[in-house]
Image 1 (cartoon, rainbow, N blue to C red):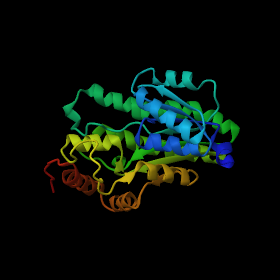
Image 2 (cartoon, rainbow, N blue to C red):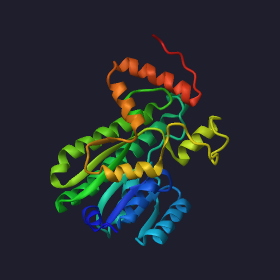
Image 3 (cartoon, rainbow, N blue to C red):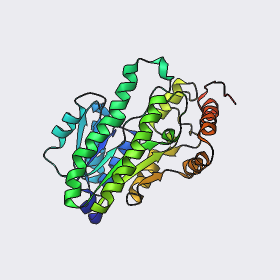
Length: 280
């Protein structure tokens, strides 16, 4: 147990999107440092498995709370699940796009649900938990973003827009809170080897199935993402995970935005099997 870490970010952490992938890896990393965890996601059975493994290996407490973060009452349920504990750390890891489809392929309610889950609920959670952290003079917030939020690209219109929102939200919160002892980090991910990505690649015929153990070229493991998050909590406001994403962000930032969008179209065609004409 890391007593200094627990004193700064404990005694409890809330991790949204903790049923698998980055959220589960980060929850395990926090528990290993001695912080109790509240695990939030839709799927109770998976949350129960993560909670049981944390209790068995870390010896800390773990609450598994099934919540649909796209639902209108999501924040009310978060408040109810955490009203009796002191939360010193909050990580929002939910919000993956499981479809990778054109904007007009789905009803507008699909986009609005993603906006609620990826934008409204993180704002609500930050507002709810950051106040007590600032009063105590210590705490931490991690908002997981995506390289998709750096520039527009096809098949992830709403997702990319919400991740741009999350990145700027974290940066602005850091600007206000870091002098009050609260570490805020916009954690921007590139390709990350998670069950969600494997399911998507399997549906697009790029893996034999979600359980195909084949490595995903250029993808960072969820465990490595969690390690980078913990190592860079005090290095806000923004941290890009992995050398490949850091290089890519520099290259995108060095060219006109229209050229960057055209480059993203080409990259999507190459890596996701999509086909779209790129105009000069």
